[in-house]
Length: 128
Image (tube, rainbow, N blue to C red; front, side, top):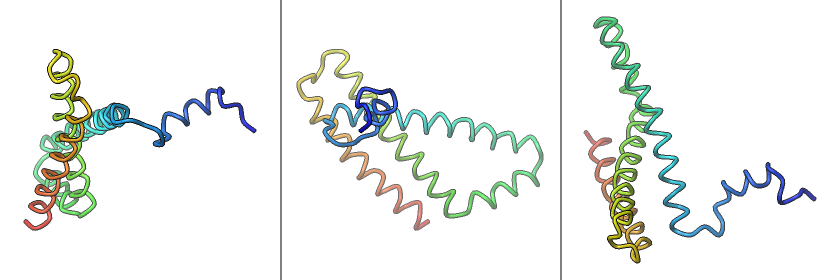
């Protein structure tokens, strides 16, 4: 039986979703969305570099961007942006001592708003 205090076991516990409270989920989702948005920023800069390569290079990128998998990736970026922004507001409020006892309710509220806004965006994105 593996040692539960070994470094690999401790690393795996970080990814274990069981027995996590709302604060842990808020932290994990905030970190994941931050990483995703940072990766997107670099991809966005690469795409903007296509403009400097001339209209043919940019037109070929536009053809790639019309594929469903890329559109779905854009939807994930929007969802990450909505969640990350709303969670940032929650963190700012609690950092200033506002609504500290209601952190869990704020997290659940921002998740509901994120889901609703994401669904609205997805419907408009995929039906346009």
